[in-house]
Picture 1 (cartoon, helix red, strand yellow):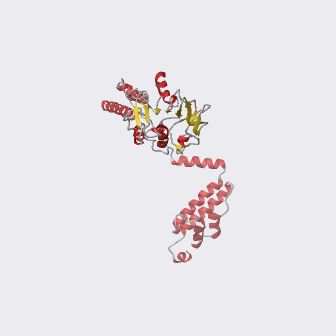
Picture 2 (spheres, one colour; picture 1 turned 90 degrees about the horizontal axis):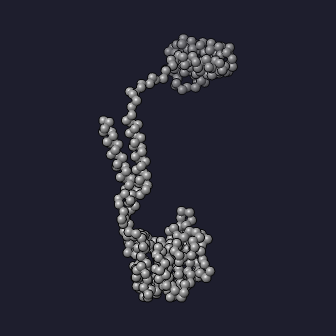
Picture 3 (cartoon, rainbow, N blue to C red; picture 1 turned 180 degrees about the vertical axis):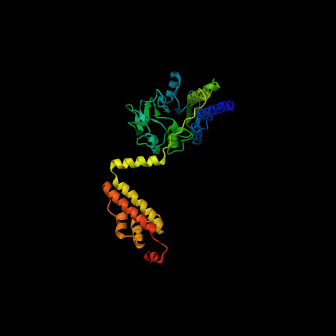
Length: 372
């Protein structure tokens, strides 16, 4: 049985560790985040299809073609030469949209678009002609940016603006506080799609260049152990420690079990005597009188055929009705509460007389029945 218990514990530990690792592991996604060919919620395939439906020629390349009219830089983790090639789109008269607030092409960050745990839509509140039809935009976890001299800020919040348009050569660089507004999950929210179309495809036939995010492929060059999150490892370590402590606690035996003696039971008579002594020491004559009268009321109610819960007044009236002395019944049941030992002794005598009178009364006689 001992080996069986240990085997069950080991199997339980292994099962819990496997379940914890499975729950903590990241959910696989269809493609990389922000990838133009990804249909996942954080992909941008819907953006590409929307721009093409508006008549734009969408080109997804690491560097923009020379005839690009507009360009979208989703993630700026490129080298300086490649960054200069994307900046050239704006320099020669086009529009470069930088959706990475940490990019060197974007102004400084001054805040974020969220109010605590909520991220409500933002109103445009700017004079850019290209955004006349855009009323509000919905983002998730975006940043707000500083507005440099000569630039125009839109969607104000948190001490800055979520969108900043900056002149660049003959064109303009538009920096946003994040790329979440062009993802598949958010493109249909509020005026997100209208904003993307106004910035990237204002005219049919425009060539739109989109830079694919340069992320390392998920799981590339990694083993199974490297794919397990740190939280799963910590949980496994904690369960191992708990398992070892349990084994040490159950395995080590210092001797046979010791039978402990139960508590000493006090006889009921000793408890009554001790309680009486306490009442005597405190001079609680009124408590003793109440107990004596309650005992008489209970026994008299049973003797007179009354309900057990009958009150003192009802019992006293019935006792007088069967022939007991009214003064005796009054003193025994409803008289004043004694304040001294002498008064308590007198009350006890009256109660005993009333009890004896009830025991001697023939309740079955006609006379007693008539009085009742």
